[in-house]
Length: 267
Ligand SMILES: Nc1ncnc2c1ncn2[C@@H]1O[C@H](COP(=O)(O)OP(=O)(O)OP(=O)(O)O)[C@@H](O)[C@H]1O
Ligand SMILES: [Mg+2]
Image 1 (cartoon, rainbow, N blue to C red):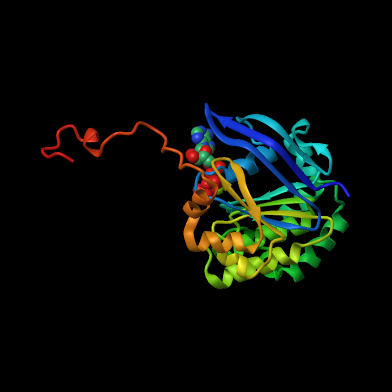
Image 2 (cartoon, rainbow, N blue to C red):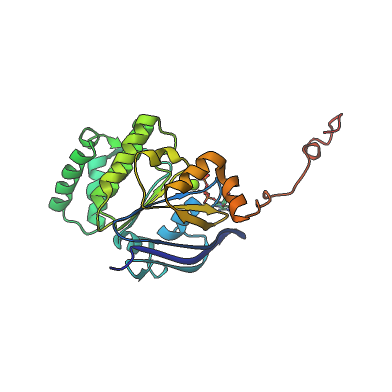
């Protein structure tokens, strides 16, 4: 079977800043892969570049089900089955979740009867029935918003789902719920890429593979032992083991005193 998502030597720069730097990754159908990486390592940028956000200078290749993603427009990528859930889901007052989904399903060529059936069926599975006639994300708790994101993906039936920080800002019960929702999405026709900062969600779901992303590339891949190493020693432990130097911070390296030219004391 063709690999769901295949990324080879992907680099991306924006405004002259190199963010992705030779990233390669393969996610087969039926699998859930987790990507863990420090702030600013390029995880969200990876999602943006794959879904087609403009403004990046991109080299390398990425394919979905064998089709070259970079040959497709943003709409075509979505219709080909690439969907992303957002790090910060937006509230849309006045648009009911049900109507939003019907519209989105229509865009993707799903007829209204099929769409309604999927909306109802998945609402039971993800316990989302009571949110269907409320405005999209309006007044939902953080955990409910993330669960709603996963529910929406399940209704729209992607082939590759990119879940950006699906567990950030959630209390422990919500993390469990979201983990259960991700497990509930598992299917032989779907590949899931789950970006997370915390190994705690990995206590409640078992990804098939964990990848560590540092400085815009995947530097190591493995099983649960990687998450444990990160929990114990942070990214510095992985850097030390792999001999990766810490990149210098951006911007001019100025002493605090340089910002306060009238300071009476030496800092
Ligand atoms: N338009 C831009 N111009 C300049 N730098 C940018 C731009 N967009 C992103 N960056 C930088 O690229 C780096 C990667 O950002 P990105 O949001 O992909 O990181 P991330 O791994 O998702 O981080 P986090 O874990 O905090 O969500 C950051 O240093 C960010 O400041
Ligand atoms: Mg991010």
